[in-house]
Image 1: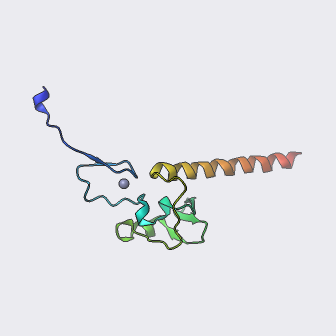
Image 2: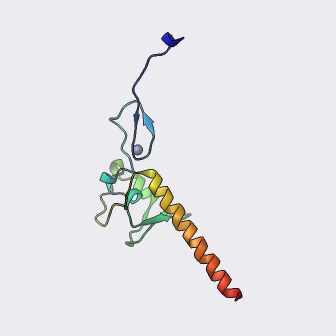
Image 3: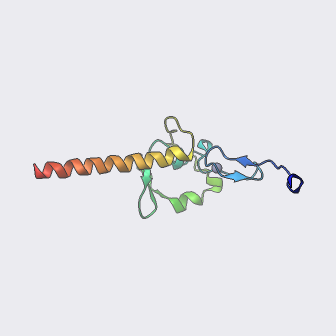
Length: 114
Ligand SMILES: [Zn+2]
């Protein structure tokens, strides 16, 4: 049974955690070297229309961003997120912001009834 299988090497991208047969081709949008919104401290999330919400007032859609050569945006206003480790921290940030907005909304609502 053991002989039916051959051991191979796989590569996991440390930024998006996808697994590949080679470590040569993947260009990761979460790699901070590309200076995209995905690793930027000013990115607050994505609207339902797919527009990135940027604290620096940049107007860029996910579609536009995906058209950048190898996801290399090289935004001059880019600043790396504090403690950035990859995709997880980006998703976490969107989630935290969303939760924060919910709390603020709830507080505003309770003010209304007082
Ligand atoms: Zn990746």
